[in-house]
Picture 1 (tube, rainbow, N blue to C red):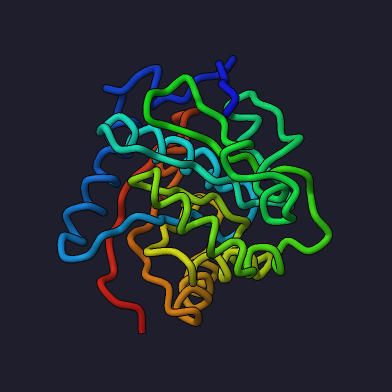
Picture 2: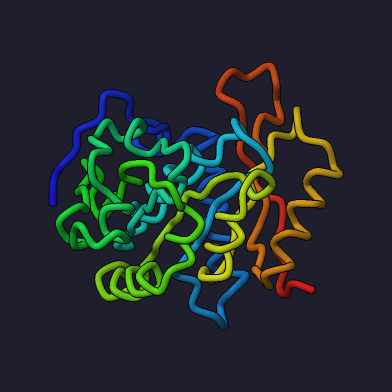
Length: 231
């Protein structure tokens, strides 16, 4: 397991008392308290389209869970346009695709970050068949093995409206957080994303509205709500 020290720390680490960091804590708390009767351990994060902040949200969510003394694994399952290795300033030469293609074992490619309790599994080299890899029984086995060592698994996936990858991972997750850029995404697109998640019986834990205040360069993250069941 390698170790990373990042050049550009996340706000939940550098400024844990900021309004944005507090919003991530609210997100974590609401997920925990709205699902007291169920053990939510695998949380998928997606968006309706590119550049809505899903990867940043995934990383900050993972940090926030780690700060609550949970053992957290952040998986970059956006094989088509991986981002987490940039956020954490680590190599993407090996990662999830290396494990799913039987080239490496999980423990060999996990990255121990500078944040206590938080490990990262980069996406790895871009494969020719991301959807097939994510839908494989080896992906199922990887998640089951991860549950043995980690309390919370956060999975960053491609936008749900662009490729089928997110739907595939949603079916393997305990719940989904949908990230929406409130300034650029129309209501119809958000509803279509919800329908796509309903199609695979995914449980939407909540919606993160990004960039509510357009005057604030950092944007803002807000927990919108939780659905107990998918129709």
